[in-house]
Length: 205
Image (cartoon, rainbow, N blue to C red; front, top):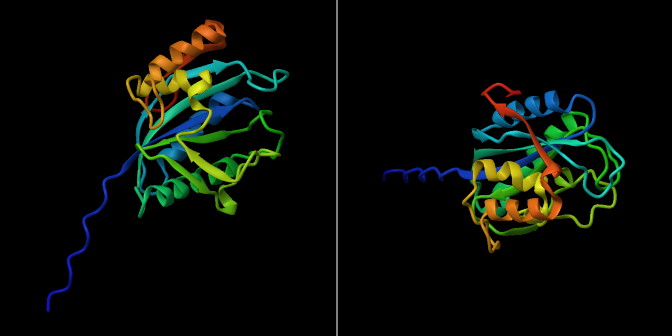
């Protein structure tokens, strides 16, 4: 009797990951973080946004942040929840490898990696211990995708709109570029400034 055929490999999922840093040489840190994301097992780096300098949110008395977004094709996993959790754990591992320290919410960051979107999935699932945020007093232990604050955070929307301006994430009622423009009106054009274009190796001025 013939052995059953192996199931066809699942199509990778397009994930969007937000990057931020404001401790030390933030630009150099984010360049290295992009390459670390590209080297994740089974991942393919699809695109990298421009690099932005952005005003801090929540705690104003700290250096400005550098922010960007990357698009990655990643393994889908057996289901969206497990696929997203596997990516989340990898992101938190990279943060720790880059020296991320436990600080208060909205405080300085050696490196912050946020899972913004995982395909068109809507996810709310408990994080495993190695996927829990290092933010002190984090409001819960759930991974929620799309990221629950993304549509009101200009430091996310500006770089995300570089990569997917017409995308309407699951649960949103507007495209990414429309959300960016809405926040630009609310916060003013000085809230974000472009400081680099990705050239395949890093951001050139």
